[in-house]
Image (cartoon, rainbow, N blue to C red):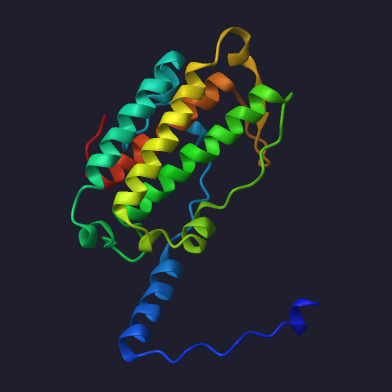
Length: 206
């Protein structure tokens, strides 16, 4: 059956309140401005916003930094659920949405790290973080569940980095946009993301 031949059932009737929530969700999801910047520059110079000098991070410290960052996100997610789900502006993610993103970054980088360690010079599959946020309904997830999932993803990733040794740090992997990483530069590039997003929600620089 082709896409044009598929039919969908009629949606159930919406109350006025349901319609308002549906409309708000559509508007706020579409209002996010996609991040198309190439952030690999953080490997060459400190981030003026969050303050992290990723290029100077000791590779063996990344596992501990991941765990420490996750603990701070868990503290953030203990806040008022309504406040956590509120966007400061329509085009900026809420604290909850940022936390969901960080959880999924930890998961994604674990997969990519595994590829780099198991295969020679792999090409990473593309990931659209903004499409994922909409598809997975980040803004509707439960903060307590996200906190548990984020902590678990962080621990798995941290343990994976702890297992890297010797020549493994020099193994390589590639993004489809041409960015090329060693496991060492990949570790430093990774840690900037959750640190920067913690700054986004707390305003506290490293």
